[in-house]
Structure formats: structure tokens, C-alpha cells
Length: 208
Image (cartoon, rainbow, N blue to C red; front, side, top):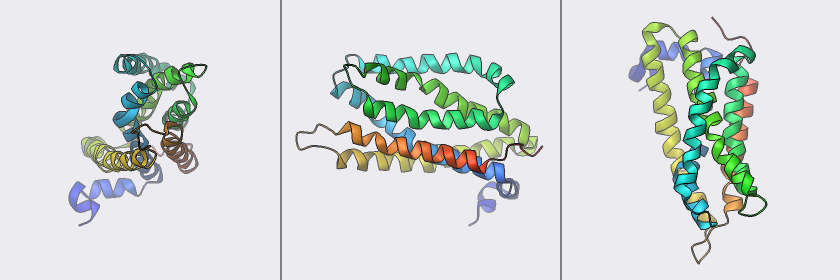
């Protein structure tokens, strides 16, 4: 069956618009590296010696609230294209920081990577919702949000979780420790690639 059979012809028509299609693909793609974060960040921080790793990760939720409050001010100075691009880049950058960070002189990289959660989440997911409220007719907004959730949290999330498991297993030593510096480079590369795809594909002036 076609996409139109499942989600309606309105969604199929929206996907024919360049900006909508590029945005949908980018959100589905960025869900792949996010699978690494939710599945293995706690294990990573614990293994390298960070005490109370779960509590330290809660700083990401604090930053999420902070950047959610500052997002309206960001909209005054930056077009939606660059806001979402920054958010997508943040997903890739945080994994690069995890790859090169450590518990000594690179400790700041670990904390910075955790704190980037607020930028990554709000500048992609929340900014996307704001854009869709402007670009999509009221009659299909809920369906469009459901379709995007299906692709990002469903297809992208499952793909990310599977890929994360395979990559981590590949870089696992016999003593069950891991080569985390190489593991995190995979989602970092995917995140940066998705961000560049979005920047090059998304038109500067969205269609009204």
C-alpha cells in the first residue's frame, strides 16, 4: 500500500513539497543517532568512571527546559532553517564530544555533550512543530505530526536502536569493556551528515 492509503492523500501531497519532504527525511535520519544516546550513554559514563551517571544525565533535561524558554527569542534573530540546522548539528556534535571526552582534561566535553540535549531536542522537535503549524493546513496538522512521529520515533528509532546495538557489539572487547571513542564517531557522523542534508535541501524561504 502507498503512503496515501495509510495516512491520506493530504500527507502524500505535503510530501511533494520540497521543504516538508526534506524535513521529514531529516527527522527520521536524526532519530538514528539518538538511539545511541538513549541506549548507551548511561553505560558509557558508568564504564569510564563517572559516579552517579544517571543524575549527571538529568542535566540534559535541565538544559531542555532552559532552551525551551529561550527558543521564542531565537526565532526573532534566526530563520527556521538555521534553527533546525543548529539542532541537527547538536545531535552530531554531542557524540563527537563523547568520543574525545574523558574523565581527566576532557571532562568538560562530557558535560557539554550532556547539556547539548536541550539544543538538540528543542531546536529540532519543538522548532519543527512551530514550523508545521505555519506551513501545514489546520485540517492535516495532527495527521502530519503523527506521520512524522511514526517515521522518527518508529522507523528511525528502531533503526537507531538496532544500529547502536550492532556498533557497540562490534567494538566490545572480550572483557566486556568497549572502544567508546570509535563507537561515538558513528552517530556523530550520521548526525552531521543529516544536518548538512537538511541545510542543502531546505529552501531558504518556506512556501506559505
